[in-house]
Length: 139
Image (cartoon, rainbow, N blue to C red):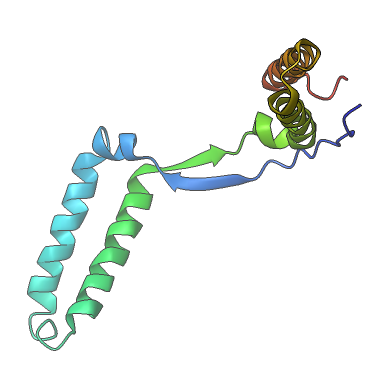
């Protein structure tokens, strides 16, 4: 019997820049923001630009790009539980049983060991299907 596992359903919400939104609908806003930034550098910081190190200028530009991309195309991403991580212990248990049966079959090569290997492989497939369907904890 595989070890029992408790399900931890902590869902954290993260925020990411959605590239599809950025390319499709937010592209014009993003481009105008970049043009405004370049124009402001040329107008206001024309004396300051030659004194900046290239790495500083690049980091300023990079931070501005990230900020404007977040303003235009930031979207909240909900982390969904992964079926593999939810039933990791059960799957690992059945995988190890399958590996042991395979090693025994390779060492002896008997029909009995072959039957045992097929049974363990079938059990692993059943557990995997249950895990994918969300029924991993109903054993």
